[in-house]
Image (tube, rainbow, N blue to C red; front, side):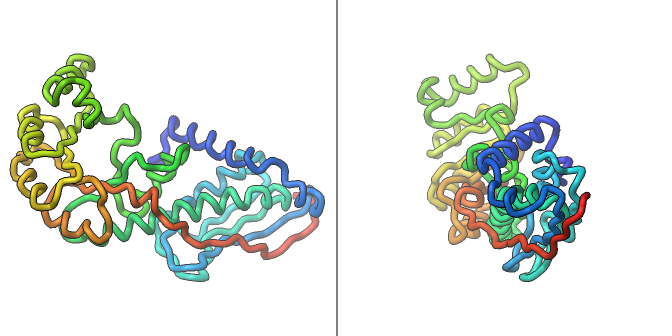
Length: 291
C-alpha cells in the first residue's frame, strides 16, 4: 500500500521531510571518528513490545536520501500493518557504519511514531467493530508529517479525512459567519468553483442540519453535539448524504456514538495523542572491509 498511497506529489513531500530530518542531525562526528568509511555495520530493528508496525519502507528511503542507498542492503521481515510480538525482528540492514549510524535515529523516529499511530487507530477501530462505522483521522497532524501520519492511520485500519484544504471544501463556523449563513456560504462556493469539489457542512444545531440537508452537500458533520441531539440530527439526514460525528471523541465515548450509526466518526486523538511504539535498532556485527 505504501507505493499506492504515496503518489509522486506526496512522495516529493516525504523526500523533503526526510532530507530535513537528516539535516537537523548535522554530521555524525562521533561515528566518523570511530569507524572507517569502508566499515560495514549489520543491524536489526526489533520490536520491544507487542505492536503494529508502520513505516518500514522508509528505511530504504532514508538511506537513499542520505546517498548510500546503493551501498546498503535492507531486508524487511514484516510488513506494514502487521501485528508483531515482543522480540520480533522486523528488518535487517547492512551498510557503511558511519552512514547507518547517522540514519539510525531518523529511521527509528519514523517507525516508532508511525507504529504508535497505527496502534492508537486500531484501538478506536476495534471499539466500533461490528457497527459499520468508519473511523476517520483529522488534519490534527504533526506539521510536515501529514502524509506519513495519515498513512499510519490506514495501517491501523482507519480511514483518511481530507488530506488538505483542496480535497474537500468544509464550511466551518468562521466561514459561515463571514458569509452570513450556511446558504449564502454554499452558494458562494458553488459559484466560485465549477465543478465544485465535494462539500462538507459543519452543523451544531438541528436547525443548521435542516438547512444543510436542503442544500444537498456530500457530507454533514455533527460537531460536539450531545448524543441525544446527534441522534435527532442523524434522523434528519437522508441516506444519500454522508454523516460524520466529530468533537472530543475518545475511546470511552466512541462506541456509544457508533451506535447512532453515522457514516463516519472522526477523531484527532489517533494522531495528536498517539504514544510511540517501542522499537530498537541493535548492532549485530561489524566488519572492516570495502563494500
